[in-house]
View 1 (tube, one colour):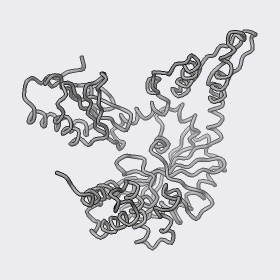
View 2 (cartoon, helix red, strand yellow):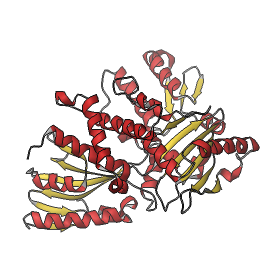
View 3 (cartoon, rainbow, N blue to C red):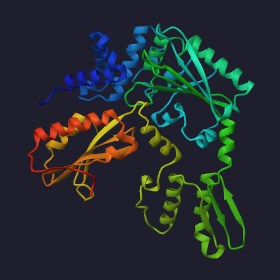
View 4 (tube, one colour):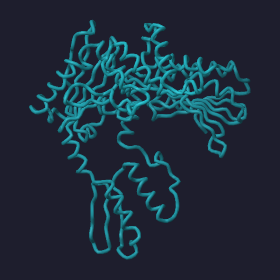
Length: 431
C-alpha cells in the first residue's frame, strides 16, 4: 500500500512523540500533534515533497516552548544557524550546562573497575529522587576512590552547583526535570528514558543523569576531578621510539607519537628508527598501521573493530550484562553472509526484522540483535530452507539473563514455525 507524504508525516510525528514521551503518549491531546504538523509543513521543504527528522524535532521544541510562553522560543527557527539546537542548553548561570551525547553515556554510571574509577578521578555520586509527590528532594552521597578527592573545595563547589539546579533547573522538582529534558534533549539511552547533562568548572566535571519518571530514582549526579584525570593520563605511556644511536623517547601524547613515526619512517634505514606501541587503545594501534601501510603505498584492510575494544568499550560490555540497567535493542537481518553479495538490514524493530527475514528469498540469511550498540548475537539462520536456532544467547553474559531477549526468541520461534515450511529446525551453536 502506498501512503501519501501527508500520511507519512502524521505517522512520523506520532512515532517521534511516542519516542520522547513513552507511556505518557496517552495524555497528549490531538492539538499538540497538529501544531507540530503545521510547524513542519510551514518551516520545511514539505510543499516540495520533502522533510527530515530534524524538522520534526525542531518543530517539537518550538511548539513546546511556545506553549510554555518561553521568551526564547524563536531561537528554534529552522531557517537560522541554530538548527543544531546548540542554544537549548543555555541557562541563566555562570556554569554552562550542555546536553550529553549517547557516546558519553558511560560517564553517567558507576564504573565496575576500580582502576577505571581512579583514572576518571571520580569523586563520588549523589542519588536523588523527588518522593511520591514529585516535589520533595531526597539524596544520598556515594563516595568513590575511598572518598580521597572529596575535599572542602569540592564540597563547597558541589553545594553551589546543586543549589543552582534546585533553584532554576532540572532538580527543582519532577515536573521541572521532565520539562527540562524535553526542552534540552540529551538522551543517553535509545529508549529516551534517560537524559544526560554535563557541566565543567576549572577543576571539576559534573554529569547529571535524569530519569523523569515517577517511582524511580530520578537523578544521579557524578562528579569527576579533572586534575586527577590529567595526572592519570600523563602517567600512561602511549609508545616508545628508539634509534641506533641509543636515543630513546617515550610518549604519553598519542598524536605526538604518531607524528614522530610519520616523520621518521623515511629515514629508518639511516637512523635505525624503531617504534613500540605500548597502549591498548585500538584507535592508536590502527593509526600506527595506517601510517606504515600508507608509507608502503597500501591501504589498511583492517577496520577499527578488529583492533579490540577501548576501556570504555569494555565497560560498555560489562554494563550490557547488567540486568538492572536500561538497555536498547537494534535488530538486524543479514543475507549471503561473508560473500560479495552480502546485505545487512540494520536498526530494525523485532517485528520489522521478522518480516524482512521471512520476505527474503536468499538461500542464506540470519536474524540477530545488537544490544546497547555494542553486544551482538545471531539468533537464527536459514540455509537452503533449513532453519537453525543458535543457543549463544543462553551462554553469553550480555544476553542470558535478559528477559527482553528471552521473550523475543519465543516470539521469533512462533512466527517462524507458523510462516515457514517445516523442512527442518535444529537447535544448537554455530558450527
